[in-house]
Image 1 (cartoon, rainbow, N blue to C red):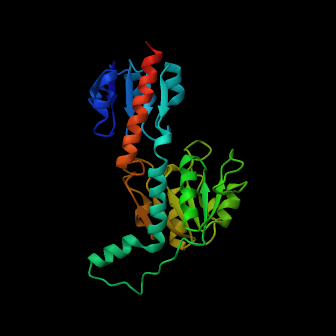
Image 2 (cartoon, rainbow, N blue to C red):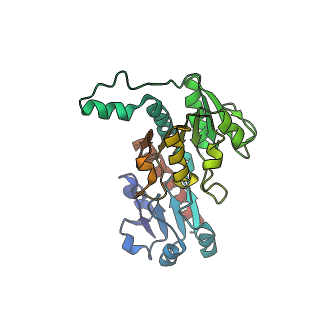
Image 3 (cartoon, one colour):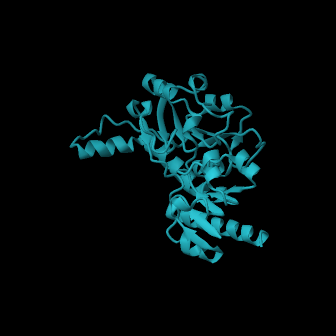
Length: 293
């Protein structure tokens, strides 16, 4: 059995998987691979899957599966899994780091010091304690973020269509009601037809003036131009994102907007998380092999 590691995983993964078969990172052998491991870079479209003639299993190292044509994979008899259980801590910590970084102007302060400036009076900070955090999507990552926010004495609201209660957040029945009450809004929902562009001029209008928006979910959940307008007008106090319409993003109107914090899609890229992903990938392949003996 040939296992193709198509994207970047932990350095010890090839040796971990060698017991299951031959392991390669040569994308030119995609047509031979029975198992293909991807992250966000590889797009398993219909065209890609047509080229993966021997593929029986795709494992996405991470949470979302929007880069896999799942209906076509199912039609081809290809099993598709992700490693959602692995990434909660890594992404939640990054989201929280951006929640701290924005109101404390960490990047601006650092850059000003390097430029020989002393902006002690100009930089105005605000605290997280006592503020309200609205979490859009109370899955594994959203709940992990809620736990951290509680430790900072934040009020935590949660909106999720099929989560009726949790010990870690006050459940709010609608997204609009969550937006209206939140000083900080953190996005943790999948990219679906129903969620694409869900943050737009209409939903932004329902937010508190000066709210901070954090996005570690998917870039296409927002309408970039509408977020830029809200930042320029002051309706949004800041926007921090680790996710983009494409990796890398190329041109984006966000780059000219004020009060922003940008990261290159590193939410899952901790040493610890890559080790957890490796454990889950090994387990999934082992189960696949056992069922197909």
